[in-house]
Length: 287
Image (tube, rainbow, N blue to C red; front, side):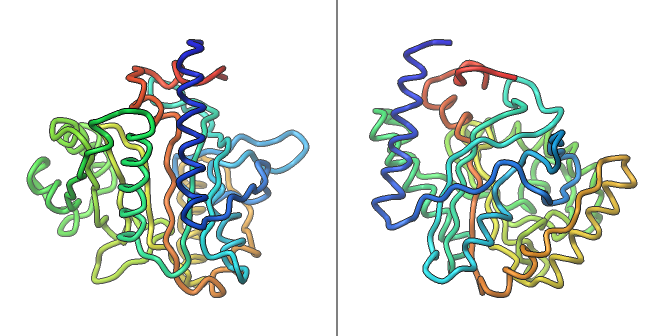
């Protein structure tokens, strides 16, 4: 491990905390071992021998906090885990930054992220990041232009995922700098709201590297329960582990009212800022 990179990583994390603290966010810490992960296909949480799972994200636990009075703006920095993810951009254990704002939309969170990156860019003397004005590209326009088809007219999950990896993301990389890929098909909504046939979700890329995933959060417990049931059925059909339901999460959703939030990969952000080619180069140790 390069000691200089560790020092720079510490500066970046310090700058992230300063950004949110100055804007009235409360830093929170939720459990790493959880009983009921969100059932998302192809995202597997490592089981714990004494019971439960290591979290892939603190999302459900943070939303339960968001439902409480007085916790309108919260953020968390901490470890997350995913089985079977190992490569230049993936590690079984990684560091996630998540923040949520009650009453906000995905557009508000995009403004937060733009300001955060500019602030961290200034603090770390990265002129390109500090001065960047990210562009916005809709998913529909991207697939029409770079893949030659419209996912809304002929939905095909396998084709969508394949073209995202082989056509859309390479095109985004060629654009350079920051890109918000916005407005996903309803089948990709996950925990996001859907209006007029479009999921209120974006992903943010820097030089083709995905850094963040944002939703205008779905706060309809019945619809979220339906989506989770469908995802659990799909996981079982694929031979993936089934997860218990988090009833406290469903009970919390109506109390939130409306909100938006985002997950940002801290390791990947550090990779961008130090020019590292792999996630292993910016972590003190790797599983």
